[in-house]
Image (cartoon, rainbow over all chains, first blue to last red; front, side, top):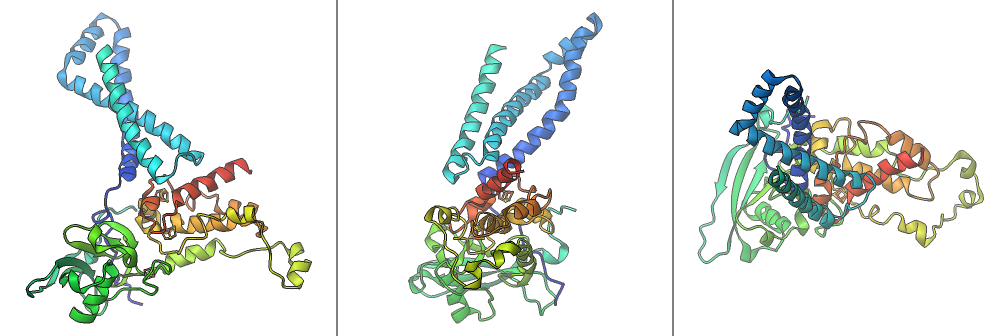
Amino acid sequence: MNDNRPLSPHLSIHKKILTAVFSIFHRLTGFGLSIGSIFIAGWIAMISLGPNYFIIFQSISSFFVFKIFLFIWTLGIFFHLFNGIRYLYWSFGIGMELKTINNSGYLVILLTILSTIIVWMTV
Amino acid sequence: MVQFTLPANSKVVEGCIYQNKDQNILLKKLKIYRWDPEKQENPRLDTYEIDQKKCGPMVLDALIKIKDEIDTTLTFRRSCREGVCGSCAMNIDGINTLACIKPMNEIKNEIKVYPLPHMKVVKDLVPDLSEAYKQLESIKPWIEKDPETRNDKVHLKKRERKQTPENRAKLDGKWECILCFCCTTSCPSYWWNGDKYLGPAVLLQASRWINDTRDSRRKERLKEIDDSFKLYRCHSIMNCTQSCPKGLNPAKEIAEIKKAIVTEK
Ligand code: SF4
Ligand code: SF4
Ligand code: FES
């Protein structure tokens, strides 16, 4: 047998499918959120550490970059939450018809955006 | 190790162009993956121009036309030409499907044809499926009976084992699988862990035998498959269900197996 056989192309030629993109994002947000939560925890802890730290807290908070970070963070949280609920249903074999899968995907995007907007309008 | 890029010998290069200079034709371009085991060369992408007016409607018709009229060395599998044998599975326009039931008109511009993804290529569009077949064998795709019941009347008289319509209905959505492996080779988990993860096609088969009421090894079958690699590499990415040309839902069947393992312990 010829073991010089090439491997057929995969990632580069396969269409990106909505559900696969969701799956990747779910993992990315999961990873990002767990790393990010360390920073968030530190940021919030500064409030309780006394007036000196509170100034640092305030100055960090006023950074525009930090606001963007927080915004993306909120998006990430809501996406991970809603998509997680979707996966939970799948664990019971519910909602796994092709049409439902795509529709629930769109619903996750919609809910994520809506919730993020609501949160940012109230703070 | 997961490798996202292709090894050096597998990188695809531009190949030959077979132009069609005839007048008054309905031109369709096909770009087809080629690899010849007898040459020490990298795979290449050859371009063929055909007249769609003088060709059947399906991608397989075009492949046959090319082999007949332009390039006899083009190699691919086909048999039934009507979507029941599973031979002509390949990646067309980015999605794994059966060439014989994929209409060319569904693809606007040029048609890109590759072998099933992340498989060893035997030649051109023919992937090596022997590992996948071994995995299929590992789940024992046949009815198994307890030793006690093996000698029962039905068996001794070699009568058929009947099923009620309700029990038979439990196999719907499973028996229709033609083992084309479109689903398995579209699954990213299978790409990265194909040596240990069984993949959607074989897991769907597993479910077909787990749910056959004439089989007496349901419990054992569930136990055998309850393995972090064999089964739980499925992360519901859903590429499988999206690509099954028979409209089956392997991802759902896999979820059902996982559920049965938890609830029947
Ligand atoms: S649902 Fe499971 S089997 Fe199907 S593509 Fe995704 S990981 Fe693979
Ligand atoms: S489930 Fe569908 S895609 Fe997978 S092997 Fe069976 S027929 Fe082919
Ligand atoms: S030739 Fe049989 S499925 Fe396409």
